[in-house]
Image (tube, rainbow, N blue to C red; front, side):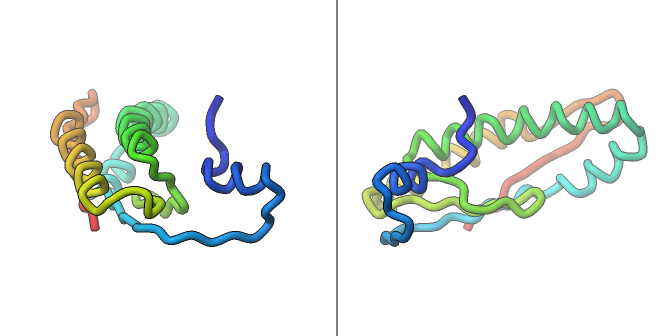
Length: 126
């Protein structure tokens, strides 16, 4: 089953807590090269859109899985960027390790070869 809302919010809702707050760390990820790739593939119509959809799944799925494995969750998406929230049960070191793993993942799968072009996707993390 896919998580449609962050586990923290689901847990609070199940406890009937309609308002809550907590201390947290945030991380912002932005994928460079994504806009150019999207514009190029959209010129190819439906088939280009399908290629783009496949690439989005190849890139986002492992990165999001890494974030959840480090007890983080995504609060917002903004195109090819998103904000991650880590509860303060995590340490700065834990979050830095997550960022390093995300960076390593992009080094492994950041080059996407298609019949239309090869696209280099990189991640900027703050």
